Image 1 (tube, protein in one colour):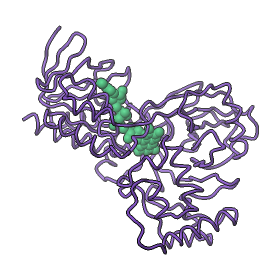
Image 2 (cartoon, protein in one colour):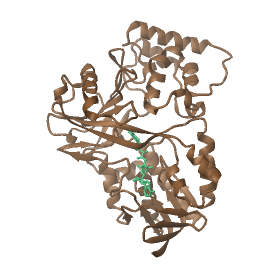
Image 3 (cartoon, rainbow, N blue to C red):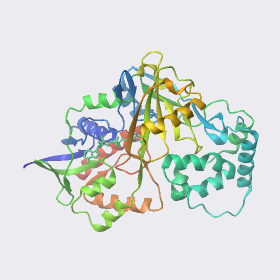
Image 4 (spheres, protein in one colour):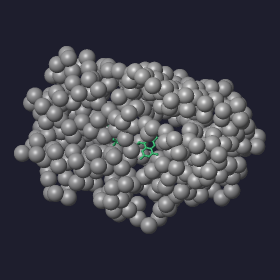
Length: 433
Ligand SMILES: Cc1cc2nc3c(=O)[nH]c(=O)nc-3n(C[C@H](O)[C@H](O)[C@H](O)COP(=O)(O)OP(=O)(O)OC[C@H]3O[C@@H](n4cnc5c(N)ncnc54)[C@H](O)[C@@H]3O)c2cc1C
């Protein structure tokens, strides 16, 4: 067993870990970065299969921070496009624009009526107690109709748990309240454009993996296929097969529950808190079509339970260079969290795609691959804030910064990952002083 030391050790070479390494490199700080997988990139990779290129479902780059925009452009170069979002909702047999509450004009009249009536009743209600969960939050702010026709079924399918299990504290931070003027404008057909702040995104011509491939090229120090066996937090040491690495501070972007399981000297209270952290996994299909996609939309939300999927997107609308000419590539995110039997489930999925006009018959699917994302959406349940705080307090006291989407156990974007990595690099140098 050899031993070595580094000022800052990093676990994980996804966007967060690579951003941390890149910023440490810029400041000339001694560091090492260990990646468990055989490749860098984490969730942000593009897989090539028979001439089709697939990301890990839709990965669209929204850039709000000017310094991050410059960095990303440095890595992806000029070979990218800025795409105007075309997202829709498929419900009650019709397409309406996203968000649902601002686009009732195209819905069947009875559905639009229920949504609007419920919304105004909720607005006029007085003396309601503070909502305690996501379901109550929706009923209070969106009303009965919007909640029943979209918010509750869609979110139950996306998060893999009923909105009742999700804390209202989280909603008030992340779910924008419906605006009266948007709801009215949408009811009379005035909202003829995409609303919200994510209306455009950057996308490299050959897939989002271009970004992490370029980052990894700048970071030859990434050590692949290296997963720790254990971590001694008090002695600040990571044990690998054949090597013991001591560190001044540790940045981890590994999932927070997995990090805690690695720490040999974590107290019971921390271990128990880490076991209460919840995150759902996700099964989705990548499908190659023998024809262009029948609809021009980038992705479509599907709230109704009769469909086996809750969202379908078209990679080749992000960039036509992802597929051979005249073909298309889709991602189909499945509502059921159990492993799908591809042969048994494909006919039902194809039928849904035909109904939605994505294909005109099932034979247009050239091939489909089932894929799993082990950590997809952190569940903000009623234990969330206390459990995360207990774990993070212990880690920080021991010079460990656990950050990123799964390291920080949060809901965040690729740009956030780059920012988390940059900030962790600064903090790690202070901790390792
Ligand atoms: C379904 C889905 C869709 C998304 N869509 C978008 C989108 O459209 N736009 C957007 O901006 N964001 C999107 N995101 C979010 C985006 O994927 C994440 O914010 C980002 O990839 C997080 O990067 P990360 O480095 O924090 O984590 P990860 O990408 O998970 O990277 C962590 C890395 O750590 C490695 N690792 C784990 N354990 C260990 C260990 N013990 N030792 C060493 N290495 C380890 C892993 O192999 C991985 O490479 C989406 C996420 C999901 C799940």
